[in-house]
Length: 210
Image (cartoon, rainbow, N blue to C red; front, side, top):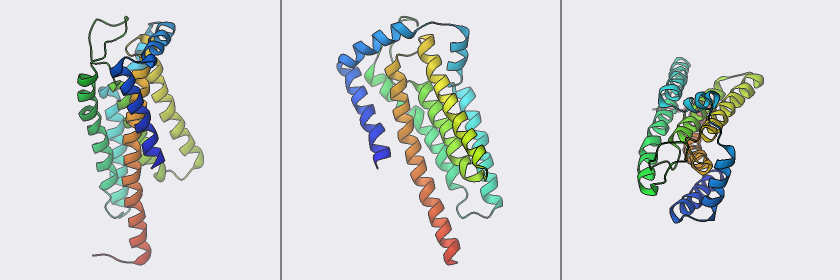
């Protein structure tokens, strides 16, 4: 529960500061002014958090997990990919109303507008790449491949985060909030998938069935 509660608590704290225009917001804006240096690389990195890029990656991973689970005769093989898809669908369902409620303006590097908190690109990247890695890890027998997969996921998320802040598309706190929200969804996915796999192992070992 700590894995679920910690990011949720941090997200609540950041959201409170943004809505109340607290001291964290002042520090956030100063940090942004020091970091923003728009260039082509930061724009390309930020684009890795686009739905058009991240979601197809997740879709391929979900298809592979479903194909492998069904081919291996796994009980309720459809649950992990379905849970991954639901986690991704929850991103816009949560982010859109939060953007409208917090009504946070963008940085000076973007046209005047509101609705920048939390970062949807960051949350999309965390959930899409994170869920893909989380569901593919049990299928990889090589420890080296697992490490490469986790490292690749981390590099993609950090790359998107850096690009968004460096380009000025988002304030740093928008991005941190996206990490927190994405982490909550990934922990929820991990709990659902883990429970399903434990039940499947228990039935296989006990020889039970309907």
